Length: 554
Image (cartoon, rainbow, N blue to C red):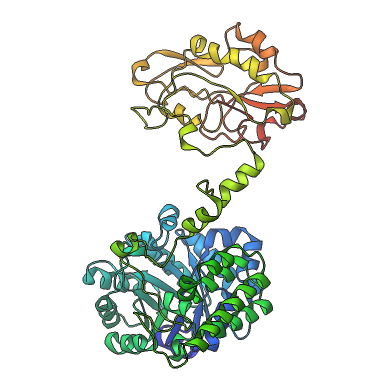
């Protein structure tokens, strides 16, 4: 059967879907999609998947797609983030048998997308995007679609959409915000941009942004002329949005929990959904908000939800015949959440306490994150007091901590039986700078936090001078411009001043110090002191020992 395209794809494969649930990381999982479909959603997207991870990790594929196959969960579009045409197509080929189309994420505005170079941060690389869409269009048996954000200029947004259409995109979702509009700076989405794109392309267009209720959906369809409307945050607070209903929160919460029992998902997803559904009620019952954050089981979450239901029902019985007061209707019904602007968000509301404030109430002023608590469990003597942390002057050249001298600290020496390494290396630490002529400068500072790398990256004043590097000497022609250290055991002392040999020989039996860059996971470094058990050396495994970079740190 030939691959359907454009409007034929939308009308036949997607069944003319108008009500669409957006791809949401950790939120549009199978259980939530099934709940949304029961309440008016006609098309759903998977959460965004990382193409590169999807290609290399079978477990990732299994957990995020293959195990979530369900006959009721169609039509379905799988969304990937990618920045390489070949990787994107490889991932899509692995997913195409489990969905009706493959979507390329060009709309994620978060910092993680900027660091990973994907999402909305590809919108200026038109040549790359053309190659990605074109290759996917040629190789896949299902259509390729795109979800984009707009540029500030309408004409540039239109040209962007036309470029994607020409490359082979068969359906375009346009989020009417720029990549800078996120969080408290979100503001309103521009339907004018979406309307202009719809008029300029000959493929179906979905609109995204400003959708809080069914009236918004109908108004968007009418004002923009798009084929469908996508909802993300509105759907999370009211999965019955597309039905035009605002049911009691517990009705949808209980239905969702029943689906989760049948189609399990990570507890963090469930907790996040319950926080969204009960958002307004949890502003009233703050102590249950804390309970919901702490419970560790699905049944525990269900118990908190049940307690919220009972409290709401008690309140209803007391307020029989009363009318809603304030800006919101009764807090126990599903309703939109209006994100506060920058000024509103900076002021703490009198009736609501932050999560940090709740933690401080219980635990006093010493509040540690979960990550820090885990670190403290492993090391009870560890402190996180900023005043006790060592302070370093910054280097004028690179901005990293400036080294004023060497200091040694045994971190995990006992694990290798090298109790006497520290005392021996103290002598080396004092000797090396004097005898080898190594200077403290530039990239060398970067080794402070990980390993004792004697990085010969001379300061500008050493240019043209001879400095020791590894097993010989070389001319320092600039920052970092020095020969690479060879990989040899230090124990022999060969190539180093003879004064170093006795100190090196006094190391604990069974330990050899070796130097190298590639040898011990030190890419780009030189002469990293790495204690390696003699067993590994004798087995000729020292070139790929896979140990941490160093057991001894400066």
